[in-house]
Length: 82
Image (tube, rainbow, N blue to C red):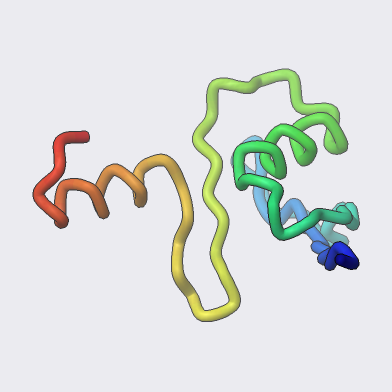
């Protein structure tokens, strides 16, 4: 079966208390089987991030946020422990 690859463009919009223009960007290739954590780690490496203690948050095309916090909130909403 052929593997479907996604082309994902990531732009650095804000950092160190300032907005960036032009926005530095990177393009990533990811399979549907990749996890958001793997994408976050690739982004950190591509932008040479040394401060890795920040949270990662992705926003899907429909506006749905994806982060560790959103998954905890979803579990709490479903009545499961976080």
